[in-house]
Each structure stands twice: as C-alpha cells, then as structure tokens.
Image 1 (spheres, helix red, strand yellow):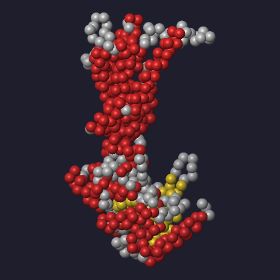
Image 2 (image 1 turned 45 degrees about the vertical axis):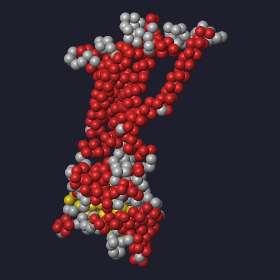
Image 3 (image 1 turned 180 degrees about the horizontal axis):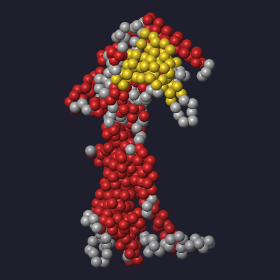
Image 4 (image 1 turned 30 degrees about the vertical axis):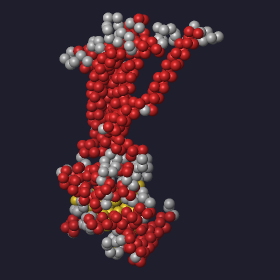
Amino acid sequence: MMQESAQRAIEIDSVTKVFEAVGMEPVIAVQDVSISIEAGEFVALLGPSGCGKSTILRMIGDLTAPTRGEVRVHGKSARQAREDHDYGMVFQEAALFDWRTTARNIELPLKILGMDRSERAMRVQEMLELISLTDFANHYPWQLSGGMQQRVAIARALSVRPKLLLMDEPLGALDEMNREHLQNEFLDVWTKTRTTTVLVTHSISEAVFLANRIFIMSPRPGRVVKVIMSPLPYPRTAETRRDPQFFEVESEVREALHGVIRDKALDV
Amino acid sequence: MSAGWQKFWRGLTGKNMRALLLFAWGSAIIWELYKYLGRLFDDRIPLLGIGFPVRSSNVSMPHVWSILGAFFQKTNRASDEVLVTTLFGQAMVTLRVTIVGFTLGVVVGMLFAILLVTIPSLERALLPWVVASHTIPLVAIAPMVMIWGGRSGLPIWFPIAIIAAFLCFVPVTINALRGMKSPTNVRVELMRSYAARRHQRLMYLQLPSSLPHLFGGLKIAATASVVGALVGELSAGTGTGLGRTILNFTYYYMSGPEKLYATIIFSGLVGILFVKFISLIEYLACRKTQQGAKGRHT
C-alpha cells in the first residue's frame, strides 16, 4: 500500500483547509478531499468560483498548508517536493519580470537551481523552440502580447523540467480566440513533454479539451462531487473540438456542474 | 551610451531646462519690479502706509545685473581671481564632499533597507527611529561631528561628508524598503515555487523591483547631500567650499551684497546639476523597462 502510493505523482489524502480570520466566521475552503493523480496525467479541477479549486492547487504546490490531512508528491511532502524543484507553476497573471528579456525570464529558475551557464543557454533555446518564440528571445515583456507572455510563463515553468506542472486559470485573462489557440499550444507542449499537469479552470470546454480526467467541484464547503474521464485520445487537435465524443463529454460535465449550481442556488 | 548622453543633453537643454530658465527670467523681472515700486513709493504701500517687507535698496536687493556682473568681478581686493573662477574652485571642494557623502549615505541606506526587509520585526522596531533621526536639526549636530572627526585622524573634510551622508540615508532607506516590498504576491510565490533562497529572492526580485522607488529616494538624497555639505562646511575648520564662501560673503555683506547672491545662485546650480546626473543614471538603468511601466501589464 505504501509502495503503491509512493508511485503516485500526487496523493491528496482527506485534506481540509479552513481559513480563519480574527472577528470572522471560519471559512471551510476545502473539506475532506481525496484525490490521487498518476504520473503523466493531465487533470483538470473544474467548478464555480469559491469551490476551493485554487486552494487545492496551492496546497499541492506548498504555497499554503492544509489544516488537516496530507499532500504527498512522489512519496515526498509537498514542501520537500518544492525544495527539490519538482514544480513548475503558471498563474492567471503571466507575472514575467519586467526587467528581464524573454530568454532571461525563462533562464531565471535555472539560475536559481544553480545550473551552469552553457547548460542554461541550451535549455533556454530548447524552451524557446518549444513555445515557438525564438524570434522574441531578446524582447522585453511589455513588447509581447498577453498570449505570448503566457507562453513565456509556461516555458519558464517547464525550464527546470519539473515533475509537476501546476496551472491556475492560465488562460483566464485572454479572449476566446487566444484561449483556443493557446489550448492547442498547451496540448502540443504537453504531448512533447508529458509532464504531469494539474489545471484549475472554470471553462468547461477547456477542461474537456485538455484533461484526461476532470474533477467537478462544489462550493461551500469545497468538495469533489464527481470525477469524469475523458476518453478522447491524444494527441488532440482542433479537429477534436468537432468530435461527437467531445460533445458527449462536454454535456456530461455541464450536467454535473449544473447539478452543483442548482443545489447551491438556494443559499447563494 | 550615446543615447544616454543625448538624453542627458536634452535634459539640460529640453523642456525642463527651458521652464527653469523661464522661471529664472520671471523671478528677475519680479525682483526688479519690486525694486522699482519700492523706489517710487519710498518702500511704503501707498495710502495704507504699511512698509514693504524688504527694503528695496541696492544693499538689501542688488540689481539683477549687479549680481550677474559680480561673477566677473574680482573675488576680493587682495585677489586677482574673478568670482566665477573662485566659485568653480570651491564648488570642486564641495562636490567632492557631496559625492563622498552621497555615496556613503546611499550604501549605508541600502544596507539598512536590506537588513530591515530581511528581518521584518527589526523594521517595526527601528524604522520610527530612523525617521525621527531625520528631524534632528542638522546645525545642532554638525559641530559635534566636527569635534569627533577632528580626533579620528581622517581627512579634515571627512566629517562634512558624514553629515551629508546622514541627511541622505533616510530617504534612501525608506524608498528602497518600499521598493523591495513592491513585488506582487504572484511574483513572490513564483520565487517560492523555484525554492529560491532569501538572497536569491533579494537579488533577482526585490532589488530590481526597488529601482524605480529607489531613484525617487536618490534624487531627494542628492539635494540633501548638497545641503548637508554646505551646512557642514559652515562649522568645519577647513575654511573652503561653497558653504564657507557663502559665510565669508555674509561677513563682508555691506561691501559687496551682490557677491553673496551670486554665490547662492551658483550653489543652487551645482545642486541642480547633481540631481540631473542622478536622473541620467536612472535613465540608463531603467530605460529598458520604463516602457513597461507606462505600457500594458498582463
């Protein structure tokens, strides 16, 4: 049993997160959630705002600690995994460093890791090719579009070849056209690297298109109410969006989500 | 580099400098108008009979042309130097003290800011005292620093630099500290996800983020260091520098009031030049990212 859980990429074991503030009712952001994710999976956490999906991601990434329960990453504590540079993170805001060029932004985590200069240069080149931004290596963030910035953020996260890629609504700030385009690119990158990925999103189509498993979450308190498998084979392309099976999964997810909203409508 | 110098040159000749010249010109006109009215009404407001706040005589308020002319008069009866030559020589003395003091103040201010940002509890304990130290009257501590410095074996001008440094470090510390705390949460968490050590976070995130704030502080520090140097020279035994020259011309005011005014104007120009120099460095350091601050942010 221990051996088995050590093989898992992520093991979330009955985790609860309570936010307490002075003079306020404690808020149960996440209640008794257990999730296990295998290496090489692309998993989506989907739900309305306030369902605790970001909190779960932040607990996996050791940005906040669970109140009860445990998160293990490849058999290690989340903290140890972070210290071992196992994580790449992407947030809604690209948060590139304004004073660094594209190449030097991608290089930063490698520099912190202590990788030597020539190896860094090679890795940065590789990453620039991965996101097709070689021509923009020496541009500053303000010279890039929002979509380009987000691609750089992904390259930066993947530069250390992390065991896990954690993404918190990475496309939330983009328009619909850019979103779909970048979803295709994400999947392209993921197909090449097969990095275990956890995506937090509130877009149904995004979750269905990208993930192989979708965790539907419900708010107040945040719980996983349903897990939906997406049997669509990889590599998925723009064609996949027109696949009848895609619509099938999409409506299954939508129904599950509507159930969540309906149940909660009375106390909103 | 050449773009930097062009910008520096534009700074000296461009809009700001034109505004400054316009201001100087306007002040000269008002000055002369006041003198004219004073002579016309015998320094009293007509009908009300209330006196003018300042007498308009040539001793209290020399003509603008006398002040400008004073630059090219002999400094005093015994010398064969014209005033502007003397002032340049004394300005070099003052600038040396100013630059040493400024550098010292900035280094100490930065180190202090880094210390406070590294140990937050120290910030709550010490920052109020840092700010309070800035309110100590400079004239009161200047003679003390001179006495201490006199026994230390350091160059005689060094205590003056200490006084200039003392005036500098507070604006540097406060602005650098604010700058180092300016990175957004997301950026701090990114560094956390890279398992960055404290010094790495400082080097790669906090110090670069502090630059725009820091330069605001540096410009305040630049003017403060000039003031510190001038005031320090008053109580120093060196007998040189623009501060001392101002004092000398105050002693011999009746024999040449226009020389005092000329020296004060010259000292002001030295200060402006020093601040402009800091602006040039700011431009060189931030030119790549300056656009980002103005432009989009995603």
